Image (cartoon, rainbow, N blue to C red; front, top):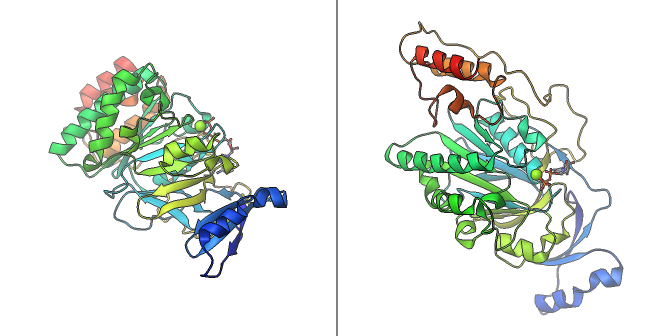
Amino acid sequence: MQGFSKTRYRLTHSPRVRTDDVLRNLSDLDTQLGIEAQVSRQLGFVAIDVPREDREFVRYQPQAVPDKNGFWVLIGYEQFTREPIWVNLADSTSPHILDAGVSGGGKTNKNASILQNIFDNYSVDDCEIWIIDTKNDELLTTCQSHPMVTRYLTDPDRAVDAFCQLEKIMIDRQKNRQDKHIFVLVEECADFTSKQGRFYKDSYVVLDAILRKGRSAKIHMMMSTQYPKNEVLPREMTSNMPVKVCHRVVYKQNSMTVLDMDYDASKFKGKGDGVVLLPEKGLVEFQAALLDGFRFEPCHEPQVQTNPTSEPAEPQAQSAPRQSEPAEPELEEWDGNGDIPPSWARFIVRCVQSKLNKKQTLEESIGLKKGGSPKYQKASDLYDLIKETIL
Ligand SMILES: Nc1ncnc2c1ncn2[C@@H]1O[C@H](COP(=O)(O)OP(=O)(O)OP(=O)(O)O)[C@@H](O)[C@H]1O
Ligand SMILES: [Mg+2]
């Protein structure tokens, strides 16, 4: 069986032989064969996995969500079946995701393809995205002008403030239900979760509360880290992130910390391979899709692709330049009185985006309130605010 990065040989043994004995006998197979081989117990057979020298990658392509209900994120493609792996964040069993792996493991690239897939399948009325990236990764920077990305923060102090605001939104949403999801990507959570970290004291209690109670308020966290150690990932927090993604790690112990089970992710090669622990399916090995750059045009009919291309294809003409000018939105009729209609608010947001100081969030700059389609202020107020703060 040919996977993206390895070939799997199935060994079906006689029912009279115990699987434990087979596994024990095969335990030094790699030494005997002089190749890297992993032996594992699978349902109904013993698997011998040998890394492929001609490893395959998969380029990101639009992928339709499995179901209109729910809020789906695409993790990657299953190592052997090549089926897409989805997580429904709206499901009570999988509201938040933990994500870990060494530098170069492929976390940011996977996170970017998750974001692109959300852009492709959902609208600003369905979802709002907050990105906390203290590493200021170049790939993610380019998505901050997408209208769905309402917060893009690189300064940890401001991120702590944002977590506090998020908690307030959560409390408010528990009283006033909202349809819109908030997806919060924290690119390096060690800054906030590590007991030795400077921001731990201020963020721990808030993050813990969001992880415990965010689901019912449609708030979903995805927390990534390069440092999967017990000091960095307090158990109280990880236990509330039921979906766990683990890319290549340095030591087996690191993957055991992430997955909370006996698993060795140091065998992965990096560049987007990994394993995801899904509450209903257990461990699933995958290859994340490679995203070259964000594409902002709405993709109303995403292509369904069950067997992604093996070799990353040449970039297609329409695949987006990293930074594209926001398209002119359609504006609904408005005589300038009363509340600002959503299309106008979004239009203004896009117009002023280019003038923003990166450290300032858009909403702070123009005084739009957070949460959902912007809560609008009177046009004249907004105009004055824009003039004062940006122009
Ligand atoms: N799915 C993928 N397919 C092919 N190549 C990939 C994939 N993901 C990542 N890579 C390659 O690996 C490099 C590092 O990936 P990425 O930046 O996502 O790692 P990371 O885990 O975020 O690292 P760090 O912890 O340093 O931020 C990328 O620049 C890309 O060249
Ligand atoms: Mg990264």
